[in-house]
Image 1 (tube, rainbow, N blue to C red):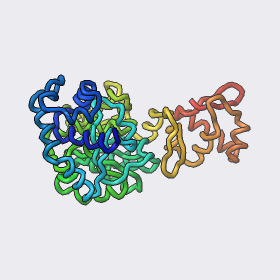
Image 2: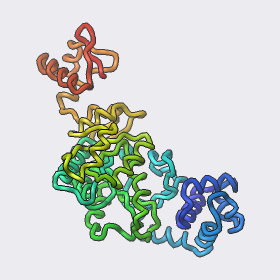
Image 3: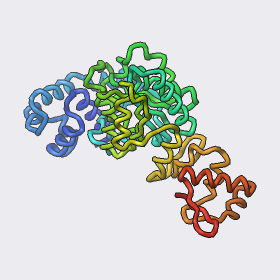
Length: 369
């Protein structure tokens, strides 16, 4: 089956609603291919476990009504790319998460460097402390080369997006409604800025309205696109905690910014720390925890990188850190490679040891931790 046919079939299933990745897998298992599934009758469809009469009828209605053609035409007219799981450009980090979106609508550009992404989530009713913390950390993340991912909501999400933009970095907003039915209202100016330096994405059909149930589903995409999730201010019951749970289930790292123990806005984040989330005060806390990537990646302004721990270092620290390997290098060789003075190298190595990035071996040799 051609990629185009597969894409059209997946869009049809997405428009029908309620089927999802698990239902899609059952359809393919039952009929042998997605193409055969969308050509099946309502009676044949409803015999598949989990589909039932209502979803079968909805899928047949979508296919017969021309809604798929209309969706592609409207997307093209609004410079929106429709990516499906059958597309080679579909974001690789999302392919292997549980219940991966069948379709992703993209306004803007997704690039290879977005594989090095960090999500920021938190309260819509953020305090001044929370807004400053989110802005500071997201700005630091963007400056060292991370793509900042968030959910476009007011409060912490908006602060993270804006900080990334102001730092000259990339940011991705994951919307909880269709891209032609933006939410929250009044976000069009921010969306325009994000599209220029990243992308706004959604799994929902173009005109799909915002609804309470959309946002927990959206949250799995926020975490799925990222290496880790930073929670900045979250109440005891918060959508941000759902994102943190998704992150844990997806094998992503979970970070949290500590808040005042008397603040209701910080109960959720503080509890995450109690439960084992990494406490974050600075971007170096994040890069140290993320450590070595499974595979090298290209980062804008940095080049190919495999160890994220060096991102938050200053120029001298990075020169010394780059001169050290995992087996051990002598102090004299580090001085020669860096062309720095002996006292500068010695003091920098001490700093790197304190940051747990370097360890001293016998015979004045140093190795990466």
